Image (cartoon, rainbow, N blue to C red; front, top):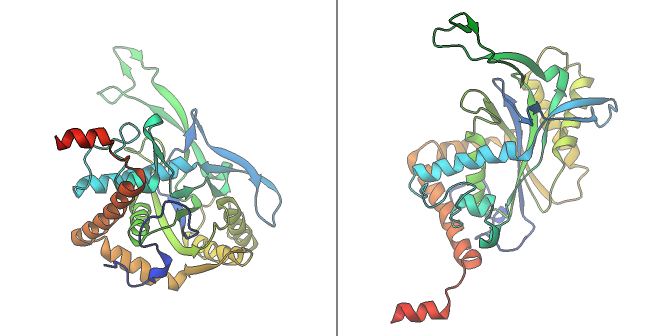
Length: 333
């Protein structure tokens, strides 16, 4: 039974195929920092030296949000839901240690277990870049670890537990395209829900790292579309031409969303693929329907069970190793 009325069935496969079939669902997302997250490697914030825009050719350093910094929290959000609704247990499937191989997380996001097998991820996420420059998007904080008294000294000795750390500022925007290859309706909803409900990214996610995902569009196509970097550069061009980038002031969210939609619409005209776009008002019915579905236990249960059925059907058909004849014979005896 179909869970969505706002999308035509031809956007989806009836079952997860074993080989690429040329159906792509692209989730156009703008990730907005709402606290002071850390996207870092080896103790330093990740950044890249790139051209500011497509037209604006000056060089700037941008903050970088690597692909695993995006996909891992979303994947973990889905695993949490599967456990909560009784479709997976922590004992049978442990992330990065003991994959069960037969649930939506393993089949959609992939797994690798050495000689025991692997499954390629059907979710493609690339590095996302901040619209604004690195120098305008981060701050350096001095961190300390006080004693229980609330002070930094004890019995006349001052603690050395003081450190400095760069943090990303609030209201820094990372345009990001998440691509799902060969979706069924259930896997499409599973990935979309994971994006919408994930709230923390980067290091120290229990204390900081608050990020909100705003989905501005969904593109169905027969191939991959523009990169995160080019989309970001195009947004920068539009905003700088309208005088909307004024450091050190943060960007205004409504202006970012308007420019992001205009930028992707313009860039898609340059793509040599067949695509159907749900942007702006065209996206509203889909978002409303998905949010209504995932706002109730009944709807969430239906979504997760449908995704689980698709995953187990794929596992039994393409992943599960057939039992040996000797084992079948011994069981028969």
